[in-house]
Image 1 (cartoon, rainbow, N blue to C red):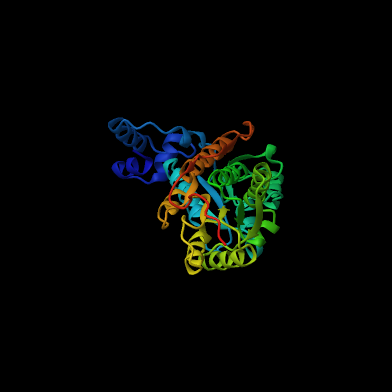
Image 2: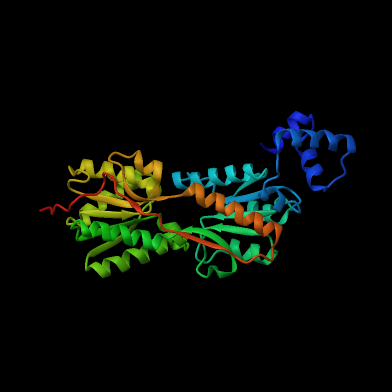
Length: 338
């Protein structure tokens, strides 16, 4: 049961119920009694999240997403949905704001215009001006992702370095000796995109540990780019038999490129990576991958932000997750090619 249902049964607005519960604005005694009667009937207890934000002024949080001109990946959409759902459960609204390039003005309006009580940032770079700006303003925020030196911020993140290393070790255990890392776009990596750089570090480390031959490439976030990238890799590295990737949006194109080259997955070529679970499961064959728990991470980000809004002095919290590799149909024993 939530505030909206109480408001409907009491015949008042949601804001009136909120004011009656928090005392932020005066509410007539008659209205209070009517609201209290509904609360008693339903056995409602304000959840901890709503109570924690009782000092907030807007009951709105900002979610800063990649530029609107870019198609969000399935994983990014998962994070957006999970933040919106978690905020709704806490009776909060979410204001979406793109950032980057011409969208920087939107970000500045959100963080300086008293529109939100706090901000959740997505797609964080190792050196991120948005983080520095929020720290300068003193506006509570939480990152989905982290900077190079993230001690002074709260964040949730996926351990891309460990997960890509695990993918490489899995492929090496299957006998693959020549591997490629297919990263996100060259523009993102050049801009210091954290997951891209950490994936590179994990790939390089695992390749060295197993004595393998490895090559790293960047690829735009779409199927056509994945197909082109795969074709170029096969041309330049004919002995290649496997790919590790964090670019889920390009994987279907890689499959198509392999099929056009007369190579089967996983008979002739294996692919493993980091991806959203339902995306990985719906590929043909399903992708062997570390399934990113977007629901858990988005909800945790909202929880951490609520805590910081309620008490800006609360210690910074960090959550780094490394889900296990789910073995599916896209990886198999290496088959050397002539």
